[in-house]
Image (cartoon, rainbow, N blue to C red; front, side, top):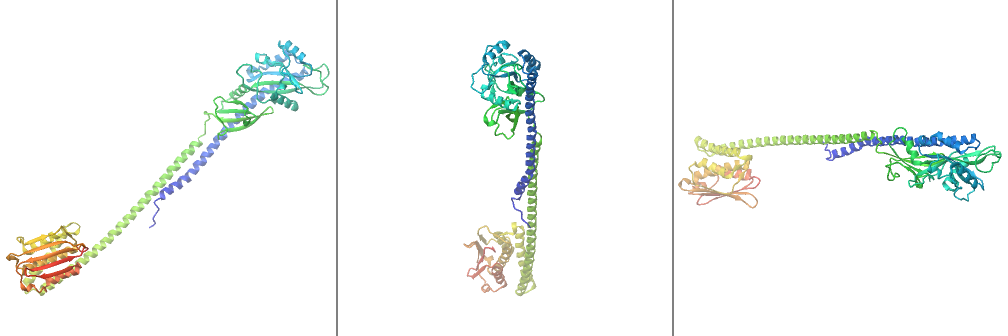
Length: 546
């Protein structure tokens, strides 16, 4: 029968668990990817809101330039203020600090700038700062005229490198151009915030002397840059306003001017802390605002609700492990049942073999007993003078065999006590009143074969002593036994009484029976000696037989 390895359940569990976990792992990864894609859509929506909001705000510049083009540059401060006022930028366009016009200055026009600012805004200020650049500008109009915007009038934005880069790009493309991150001039208090500007160039076309408004010398007949219409934005106010329109998005944003590694952080959501570079759930986006690139990093907030995919994957994993455990337990149970069936088969085969052995042993014993009875009958008949003597001798010998068998029947595990066997045989021969028996020796258990053989031996010795030793005249029998060094059982039989001379020959059936039982059946040794006191006999029975 095939024998299964003991570690088979563990191996089956490991294989089943590995195979069973492949599906949950795949489902978990798919769920994570689904959640990431869903968050990417939210991040894209946030970026789209910001871009759309800024483009709406920048459209104000296009409308303002249209005013300048329609008026061919002859826009007074009152007209400009009324136009901006009707745009309602404070209520409708969060984050816009103001809309203004910066004129390109011709050499020697500083006095005219001071005069114009004093007339229109009551500000006595010359163009600042002094600059050696190839072009100078001055903010001539900036609405609404609050404290922050009034502080910017007359400022030469072209003198500052970040603003100058955006103005040059706008001049070259004739399109709207956002600047890099700057600190707005309007930030006159301690609460300084990051911001940016968007410039839209204004060109005078088909110019003729005396027809253009603004500051400077009349232009040439072809297109000429006259100034920049611009808007300044607080980045935080603008982006928060863009994100607040519509449903709340569970998105944290970190926006950099240019690349994230440049370190120019333009905006960061409230409550967002720590580095996002190593986060696996971060989404990177790049958006171009009026020709200027921003880098956007989006991470989910605590309010971002993941889909059930990851939970389903976890449940599948638990089920897979439970199934693997159940399969391993089932195999272990089957193995135990198989082992039990093997043990039952072994016990059955052993019982059958034991039964066959007992049957063979019983047959052998029966045959031996029958042969022994026949031999006793023949020898008894040969030495008996008449039927009565035969009947008496034969009956006594059979009774000795029966007595030994009774001892074996009542003994535990098929064993008899040597002392009990000896006393039983001698009482049967001499009667219950006989007192001439001396037995000395340790407690000794005898097997079935030895018991049956010694029962006949003791019976023959007692019978011969009764016949020839004249024990009724005061003699006795002394029996001693012990164990030799090799484990053999040694029994010494000694008779003390008057000896009948006819017993000296030792050629009777009893002596022959004793010798055949000790030497033949028990493979032992017999020493017989007839003294003046009586018979002395030593029986040596080897250990296996004893």
